[in-house]
Image (cartoon, rainbow, N blue to C red):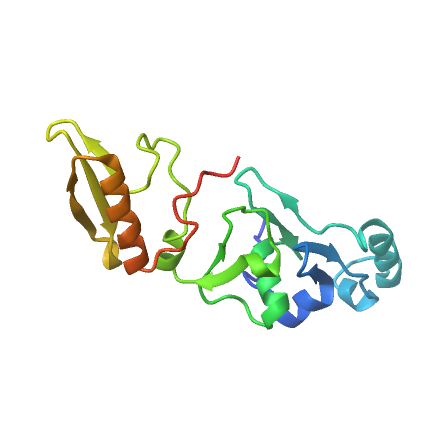
Length: 194
């Protein structure tokens, strides 16, 4: 039976900064040249392994886009997301909460597009569901009552009915006013990324 290798779940921020270059204007992460000390764990000569690694990877893109749309990869065997690595490089610490992509593009890791948020705040900047039939988040047609209903999620995941309206425009206006009142991001309800 093979003994599992214990790998750290987080890498020291100083080591992340030592291994990767982040361009805040483009969001691109590239591998920095490594030094032989980064390969002391290898069975082979660290100088030789370092030279091979630098020839193959130094200056090249560090991560790739995954099926879920985020850019991700590995640092020393640890799975990481590019937006979290960007945060570490810019601030010197791992994020204490979630990182929100302000424009909703999961692969846009420019520093101006990233912000540290709690889960509730992150949920207030989401795209409209692909199965939404009204075209507006929080607005739906009630066949039985023959009215447009507007609702919103308050804090603590409480869904609050804003009212029943004869016109869709009135329901949309009520929803938009409530979004401002409850601190929803201006991008909330945008079309999903392709």
